[in-house]
Image (cartoon, rainbow, N blue to C red; front, side, top):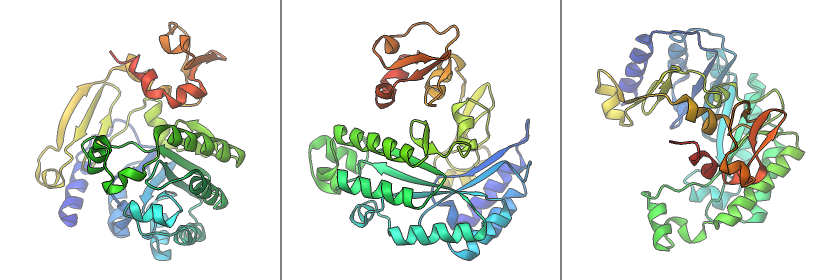
Length: 325
C-alpha cells in the first residue's frame, strides 16, 4: 500500500495551486520516519520554497540511524520531533512502544552528529501506572538531553476507544485501573511547567515549551490563524477563508480522485479566541468585551493583550467554549 499511497500523495502535491510560498514543512501522523529518505526527498522537490525556514519530521524512537539522519538533512529536514511519551520502561511498554531512555539519548546524539540541532521531545502526563516520582524522572530525562523544545500533553481518552469504554465502565483492562486521576494529571502538568521553565524551556503555548527563539515556526502558524496546506490521509488545510479535510481512510485516499471529504467556511471571530488564546502571549484585547471567563479569573488583560491565567490554562476547554457560537 505504501508505494500506491506515496504516488497519490505526490499527485496531490503536484496538483496544488500555490497561492503563497511555504515557509515551513511538517511531516506528521503515523510514523513518517519510516518512509524511505529518497522518497521523502523526491516529495520535497515538489514543494516550493526550499530551503524552508523550518522542516520538521515526526519520528518514533528506535527508527533513527546515522544514515537516515544524514539523508533527512540532505532532504531539507532540520528539525525532529520525537514521540517519546515516557522515559520509564514499564510505562513505555504499556503504550506499545519499544524504546528505552538509552535509545532516545543515542538517537539524539546521532541527529546532532548529522547536523540536526533542533529537536523536540514530547511527553504524556497521565499514562497508566504513572506516578509523581516516575513523572519527575521522565521530565528530568528530557531536560538532561538539553533539547531546545518540549511538548507536554495531558492524557485525553477517546470515549469510543477500548480504554475510554473501560474507564467509563470502571474496569481495569487496557490499563484503565492504573490511569491517574484528573487531579493528579493536572499536578503532573504543573510540575512539568515548573521544571521545564527552570531549565530554560519557556511555555509559549498550552502544551509547548521552548528556549526563547526556538519555538515551532510551523505550529505557530496554526495558532496565529495563518494559512496552510495539508496533504495525505486526514490532512487539514486552511486558506484564510475556508477549511477542508481529507478522508481518514488510507484505501479511500489512495483511490479517490478528490480526497477532500469535508469543507466549511472559516469563522474568524471564533477562531481568533480558541486558537490565539492557546498562546502564552494571548491576543490583542482591543475591542474585546469583558467575558464570563475573565470575571471567573480564567482570563486576564496584560499590556493590552487578553490571555489565559495559570488556572485558565488548566480549564482552557471551558474558556474556549464561551467563544464558540
